[in-house]
Image (cartoon, rainbow, N blue to C red; front, side, top):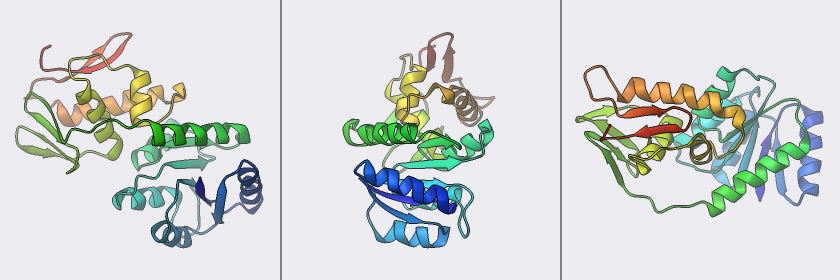
Length: 227
């Protein structure tokens, strides 16, 4: 794997660089967000690891730029900010995983390997259009409509809705959502699922329309045109 590590703490950057190389990864390090941006767009990478607080562009802004350019390379955020809102913001902007400092190096390696497995091995045939009543999701166009009206969704909201629609009229467990949307099985993210389900309901299930997203108590969630 070819990894771009962007961290402005010299001691941590050098320590992580040494450890990652010893694990067999190819690593390039940088400390400035603007320089990192140029490296991101001018080379091909297998993984990005970003600190949030960086000179120039911060880690969240780099996530936004990467996803805006339709680059699907996995992103791990490293941050001293551990509140749920901080995690939600990073994940919403395109990060695939979020590790709070201080952390054990072995945990980082485990997360990297898990992301790599899912990126390379977990690929399903993608249908261009998914439906539920008057709701349509067009994957290739990255567009969602209900009753002819465009609905603006964040990347994670879009992936969550896609996961529900792929299992229409079936219970989707939290584990499945974590794997498909956040590419993790870390149950520390379960409160994030609840937040994003709420976000989706506020955008999809408006007051004057049939409710499509349902909570199946003790099991997970379902999008259905039958309930």
